[in-house]
Structure formats: structure tokens, C-alpha cells
Amino acid sequence: MSDYITDFVIFREVTDWKEVRKDFLRPEIRSVQEYNRELRDGVERASKYLEGCQTVPSVRELETAHRLMFERLYTDAGRLRLEGKQSEIEGQKASPGEDVAKHLTELETNSRRDFARRGIEERLQAACLHHAGIEMIRPFESGNEEVSRLVLADQLRKEFGGEVGRNLDELDKRAYVSARDQARTLGQEGSTLVPLKVFTTDFSRQTLQVEAERVEKKMQQAVAELEYKSKQVTIH
Image (cartoon, rainbow, N blue to C red):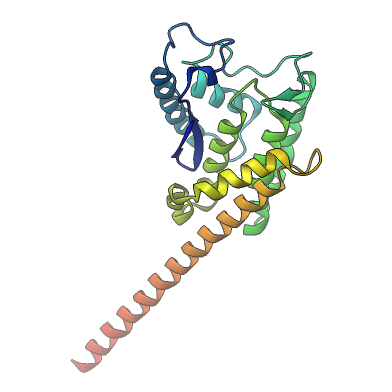
């Protein structure tokens, strides 16, 4: 499999048909090329949809984003895991199927409270914890990592904008993949996402610092121009 980045969201491009989940796969999808093309298009549709949602999407909005991302690939796109379904999804422990909706609602409530805080650090932490929360609940049969990263990218743009949004494309892909893989294998239940949260927070702080430096430089240039114009007026 190969990686590609679309607005921070790292996707695993399928290179072998064996890697494709076959249950619920639409019959018209018959090749790796068709699968990858539809996934890319789905990412764009879901990303545009999230732009019109609140910073913390509701359960229904999260379902819709997942559906838009995968509806041309899987017939179960946008459907939460049902009661009795396994509590280990894509190799990771997850909320039991019967608790998925409840846990997502709790995450939504807590995250909206956290995002209401004014401090930059607090809101960065809120974004990281919300991202980690979706990963830990794993509300869908597949595609949980993709949709949680898409939501995170949308939150960073809405909350911080500027260079944060532009710098998402400059994400250190290797560092992210390393943090993601560590998150899958290290620690006990509930702490496995620490490497991912640390990486995300550090990346966000770095981009905010870049933006702060850019704004300060612009202000210095504006002050210098005003001083120059003032001297010209004085001379004349």
C-alpha cells in the first residue's frame, strides 16, 4: 500500500485487491484503480460537507461525513456499528456496538464544552482529544481513522485558520505514520493514542508559531512603512 495526503488526512492507497474489505463492497467496484478513485472523490465530498458543520460535528453529521466518504464503495457507509457487533475493529479495541451512539454523544458534549474555552492550548487539546475519542470508540466497521483525521483537519482550519490550514499539506508524513503505528501497539487500553495526541499537538503548536511569526513580521513592515511615510511628509 502507498500513502497520499489530502488536507492532512493520510490515506492508504490500495495496491493489492486482497487488501480491500469485501463485505458490503459494491459490485461495480472491481479493481484497485476504481477503489482508489472513488475513495479520493469521497474524501473531497466529505471535506466540503464538514466545512458547513459545527467545529464538533454531531453524531448525525459524523455519520453523513462517513457516508459521503465511502458510499460509492460500501453499502453500509454512514451506518454505526449495531448492538452485538464485535468490540474490536480493524485490530483495535473499541466501544461495544450497543454503546457506540451513547459514547459518541458523550464525546460530542464534552468536546463542545472543551472547544468553548478561549485559550489556544485548551482548544488544541480539545481537537486532539476529540480525534482520539473517535479512534477509541471506532463507531464504524471501517474507515474510522480516515473520518477522524478529516474531522481533525476541519477543526484545525476552523479554530485557527491562516497558516494552520495551509501548513496541513506540509505535514511530516513519516512522523505521523510513526506516531499512528506506535499508537496501535504501545501502552494499555485508553493510553494507546498518546503518541498520536502528542504528535498532533506538537504539529499544531508549530504551525501556530509560524502564523504568529508571520503576523508579527507583517506588523513590523506596516510600522516601518508608516514611519517612512511620516518622514516624507515632514521633509516636504
